[in-house]
Image (tube, rainbow, N blue to C red; front, side):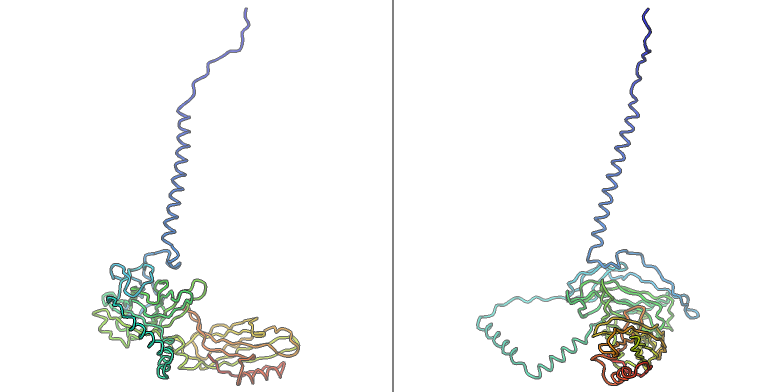
Length: 442
């Protein structure tokens, strides 16, 4: 009999549906990854086009304007204060004549021309050569020998152009049914160039209502232009008609700077008590005001005085400075007050090596500081040779750059008059606290 070998069974057939499902799942996953990568690259390209280098960083995200509730309530019967920036109904955006620089579209409204202009082109007529040579000779002679009157007029024109900061055009309208004051910032004209590299500016306008200083708004930034057109409407709700004479519009024109604080071009004050209020009830009133420098109010009032006490300790190489108080400061706000504080710099051979500052004293023209500061002086024997102090009295401002009211130099080449007398007394009388009043200078 043959021996029985191992039992051999037939192999079952391959399960083809399962293999097909696996292959289909892999293909589907690959397709999903490819489509996701394509959509990501497309969104990235669109975002790069939309947020180009010409668009200001502050306005990359466009949000729908909403009403902002003011923290302070209105008077009786006036309701709650609301502030809203509404779109400007000026139609399709156009570039006005005379403005070549492009500007960023407004997220809240369209930019429209304020006034239309027609440029007339005259046909060119060639001149004879003799006439051209005569004209050239005459112009050269005129340039070579200007008269005294021409020189005086040129100097006056240069002074006026240096002091001229341009104009601001805005519109006013009041709506009784909404208890709302609408202020439209239209445009600026002939602004000075704050960027020496491009010979232009990146201007924008800030607006607040005085004396409350609660409603603060600003326009968008327009790049590389000295004649920006904004056409932006700002609606202030909850203002009754009887409140209008007590309100003052405060415009501040600034030039945007990406790497440092924005430069202040100037400001405009418009008291509604000087405006025909009855006219803004029925129609929109257009106004044009010349932009004034911020330091103009300081020149007419003086810069005030500062009481400083010094004590020189040669054994410890320390100089103690006490800022006591100030008086007769200029009125920096429409409310007739200021928010002063003092910065102190220690200089060695004309270079600043240390700085201190006091606290801000709110709403006062007669601040009392009573703050003491100790400076470690470089070892220079028993004298203060090469040492000097620089004091800056500034007005703190939440909205714009803090403005310098006045300065004082004690020691050094700039020290003269009573300041020099005080400094010499401190140097000759060590370990004594000596105080004196000093007038602040520009």
